[in-house]
Amino acid sequence: MLCLLVALVGATAAPASTPTVVIKDDAYAPTRLTISAGQTVTFVNQDDDAHTVTATDGTFDSKGLDTNGVWRHTFTKPGTYAYFCEMHPFMKGTIVVKSVTP
Image (tube, rainbow, N blue to C red; front, top):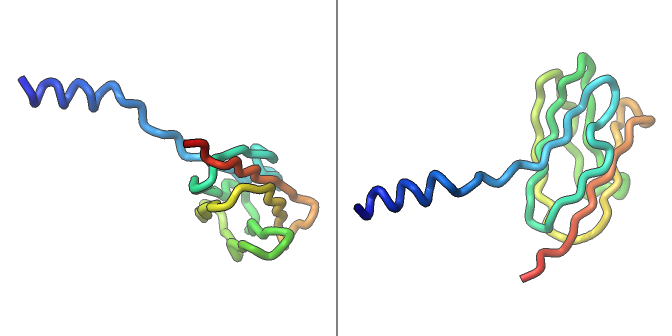
């Protein structure tokens, strides 16, 4: 009986979604993403060209991401983080990190 209860509780718990930014058609999508402090954002390059995810203030840099490349970054502090592609500076995005409320 206990096993059944554990199985049912586990089955009803929804998995947390992973914040993701897709790079495609020389753009980040979404261009603005809001997350909570401590979350990790996954950046996926689905474009034909290599791209980077580079903070304008230099706090993070993915280096070159080839087609199908994946890079993850954990944002630990609240704030607004602007980023761009070093290879295509017209590509810009923003991550807004909100503080976690207890």
